[in-house]
Image 1 (cartoon, one colour):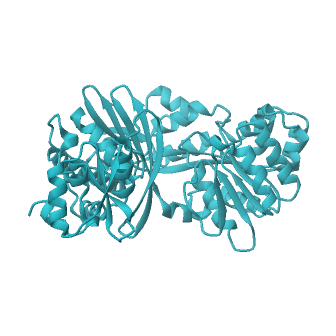
Image 2 (spheres, rainbow, N blue to C red):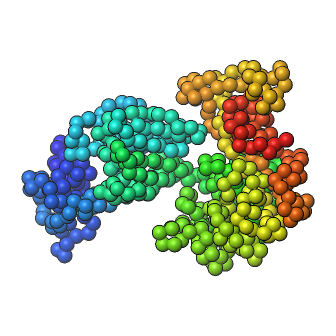
Image 3 (tube, rainbow, N blue to C red):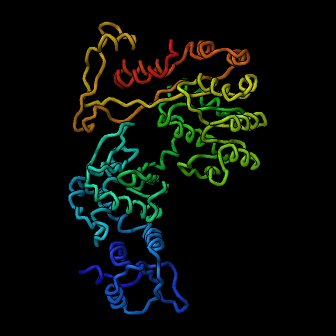
Length: 501
């Protein structure tokens, strides 16, 4: 059956037909109830006659400029039941991406192709594979030599597929359609989202496009909405740190900070804290950049710098909404730090993040923002620093004697062996499967308050805070000794944390 013959109503016009012929359904109808059809200046008149014949009734034509036609395509086909159906099929069938890629034509006039199904199947197959394998990000990177597709698994990017460069605009356009972005805009970055449900799991795919020399780069970040429902006891914290963290969260006011580099799991920890506090008896408000997960019972606001809504302005606004608990995505500047400090002094519990290498560094960061030591001492309740390290594959890792430099850095015994990655089918030949968190926590008690008040340095604070507790480095060494992670992963943490004794 031809594509035109399958058209029974205006709503049945496939995306490929609309793209090829320049005819697109528009929402609504004219005064007589007839459907509206948008027609680009380059529309195929023969297709117009064919469309009228198959519909069996009239419709009203609205002339569209090329830019308006592209926007109409984007808006009308943003949610595609065929795409959703194909995505579910790809997940069940587990089609090989290389096989899906081979279906895509490589002619110069790809954008004029009437058949978008291969591109749809390829994109959906990539998302399905990403979900199966725990991929956090999919990168579409155009170069003169081709379109490179890379996936980030356990924090590490690896090339998954290489396609002809002619495919790049098709892939970018299709993703824009799915995420309700402007297909015609290729000069400016755009951000969008795609909502998916796969095997009962709700997923939020965040889309980012960026103009480049060889075409638009597209990155898909896959967010599992179930992560917003994780409890603190599921974060993998050692029992002592988890107990101290939950005790700090029970405080009626003060500041609790989570620190670490991008990708260390700070947002997951903050959402776990919000879930614990979200018992219906508190007014919990957040200002985030962006809102990664929606939480019922929590008022969430996304920053919008274009209209002047940054973290400081958002925090100032939500404090007028009678909150009990406030979460601000990041304390980046003195203004935000000042407002957060004053909020904690007036009876609010404030949760936030800062970018420092370790927990002690967060205190120094507040000092650098010109927050007075006595204010830090009186408002700060706890600081938790964290990292994510890759777990060794339990199938293929082997025990080996470490090099002398590694033995010295990890303070291992002379006869002590460590497990090293090898690679097998089970772990995708990476040697690792999944990640595990490393944590260190400073619970601000009277002794630490005294040191902060006296403007004591980081070493003085750490000496008290970690006398009997874990630092990131100690936690990393323990995981190496237990065969959970490799020496290479532990040394990565040690290089960024020289405070351990």
